[in-house]
Image 1: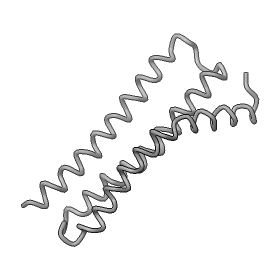
Image 2: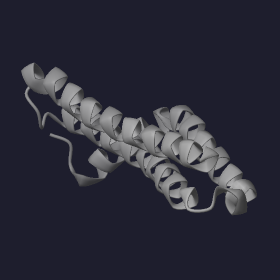
Image 3: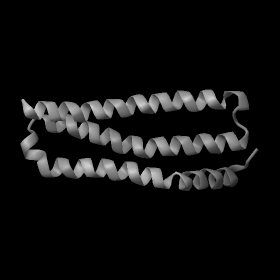
Length: 116
């Protein structure tokens, strides 16, 4: 078992290892938000749908990395049986990918509503 401070060190090191992916995802989400600020008045009512999609992308970018880093630290600590590691990663991955899909659908709906 890893004690409190050691767990935090393992968690932070695994989170740092995922920093490049986090930066790319945040960069995409921030680019979407900047486009919303520039195109905002033209979007009309679709702006709320687009903001919801972009907000979900920002939240997922951070939360996904934190959850996966926490899971990895938990596995290293021995808090999960080796036989269930794959199942745990698969379940969490499916949930996050479904939420990512919802974010993309919201952004697509905003584009479609704008054209109406």
